[in-house]
Image (cartoon, rainbow, N blue to C red; front, side, top):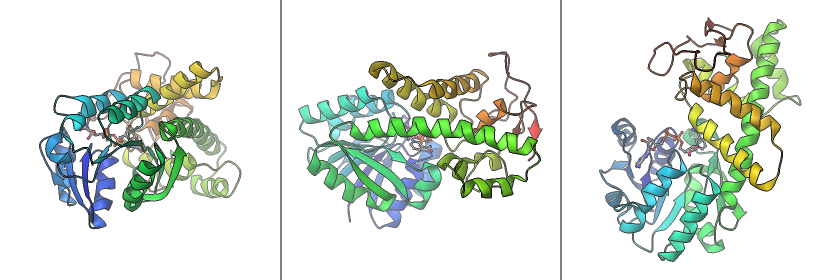
Length: 327
Ligand SMILES: NC(=O)c1ccc[n+]([C@@H]2O[C@H](COP(=O)([O-])OP(=O)(O)OC[C@H]3O[C@@H](n4cnc5c(N)ncnc54)[C@H](O)[C@@H]3O)[C@@H](O)[C@H]2O)c1
């Protein structure tokens, strides 16, 4: 049995650590958010008050944080991972970050005598809960092999992506495809409804036809069709809009640097920007379905933001008023 240090016990880190505990490992976790920490404690994580306590004596330390800036702070801070962990501890970042942040983590870890892998994941919170996440791991071969063994209780598949930052590069491309697919699932679901199709029957047809995708399978933006869809829970986030916006921005940055034209990704990016502008950064990214429906509502949505308050559509000006509309 291994000892894991874990920083970031949110939507993903929470269920991922639950699976480690379930597999008999010791997990010492730290999160700035008391609610996230107590939820993790309830499933057996030993929650602590500092990064130093979380990483002490750990075989491996994972970070599962929102953005690159959080990862840089948690690794490089005065009392951060590099300052407090033992050099024998393997370091792994599973957050979705920009390639530069990941390269920085590889370079600084090596300079300080640590082994580091980028180990982002795909599969959403349903995959995290089920222990079926796909991990794409980048780094030196032996570090990737050691990390893969420690990842196993959380994963359906672990793929060695290549050298340093190869995992994060794969993740950025994958998520760009995911959010383009989400646009397709949004538009398809709404058009099907307007054409009088039963949502469940249409979903079943697409599931065995050429329009199927992970977004359609897992996030179908109509309530009562797929359990894992946020549409069943008023679009409370399983994948926050601001994080989706971050991911697609990372792809657009990479496209700009490499000269790849990413027009479909630009459209998805604009939609997330619109949602954030209207005050829905914390809602689920599948709420972009509201831009496809004739009345500007989203099926299963009561028109409120995260705190249950009516959000304004004045910021962007081009969104129709939100209304509840059941499928
Ligand atoms: N939600 C998904 O479906 C999904 C899927 C794959 C990858 N991801 C990626 O995984 C990462 C985490 O996503 P999430 O959905 O769990 O986000 P989240 O916001 O639910 O969780 C992040 C947690 O990090 C904590 N945190 C932030 N700064 C901290 C710090 N300095 N020290 C300690 N804790 C800190 C927050 O309090 C929060 O609990 C993101 O990079 C996201 O893009 C998310």
